[in-house]
Length: 500
Image (cartoon, rainbow, N blue to C red; front, side, top):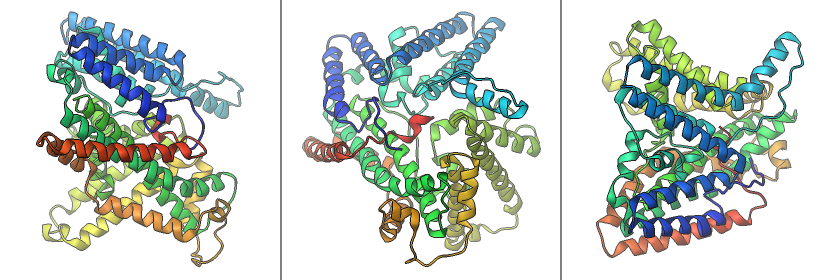
């Protein structure tokens, strides 16, 4: 989706040329004198980063931080797992979910009530605060960890920084207290490290290329097909498959690009963020896919929903029911739409089938066959196909458009050189679109994982005194070129997960 917006994007000149140099320079200058002051500066800068988008929601963010910090202190002060602590935990989570539900689901709930009962209730327009799902889940995890594991954070600035830390604030990853607070307390975090800065710049460059070159380059193909379908036009077979494949690639390179940029920015600050993607389109099963896609959300749903529901501890039926429920709610977390509910239900069903297949074939299908090239290629193809069908619901504007796309994907074949109206109207050559999609899929299937590339940069830049300057210069040359490419486009392309 391309539109003008006020948010300070990682891809924008304002962020790259003004905000980032200012934040880094002041952080390390203060870090030489006072670690608490440097942490407080990073907290203030992160709130400012959020407020750049819409100042009134920075007040909501600060109120959320104050509330959860207060509740966290009550949980620890009441001694973990005592009745009073449990009451505070329930109250804290309830308030978090109530605020999230109001902004994200109130109109959806009312609209469906009106549809069911023929009423005409209206709440008016409710603007969704950017990043609310991520900072809400981050704080729910903190409260749960405070109750279950006794974690605490007496320093207000450190807790506020944990929640608002600007690389992850808008679109994740979902963080845990134990992943971040020790780093904020480490003296080495506040000392400029040339190797980390060079490696972080290179990782940021990788994410920027993913976003600006690949995701934004392929998005017109997906937009042409899905927008045309939403306007009542019917894509032909080739257009439908190209549109879905283009969106499959766009979504991955967009979100993983954001995650790489967040990791790179954090590395410049000597802070490590958890990985959020591990080449998900190399997965050979849906189980494997969810171990690789949006990994921090998957871990959150597992630890704070699937396991509390009973996990796999109460037999196969309960296990499958818990899997389905977890994915259904995971789908609804992405947005207030029946499309997301169906997307979650699809993946819940996929996981149930996958686990049943593994259980049923474990004793009868030899390991040599399962590890053979033919079986693995078939498994990869089936997994990718299942994921692509799910993305149709994720991208389509409503159920009618999703069904129209699926029907088009099953329509009669057409000649390659036939007029493909939706692509033609958007000024897209079919051959170029096909080549772009094939190239993107090949990169996903065969290229090294960007996490491994980033780890190589970290080792290389911290193991040499000569080469970090070369890596730094090369990375920033590419960063500035990508920034210029982005600046010359007619409209800003926001990150897709900003909507969730």
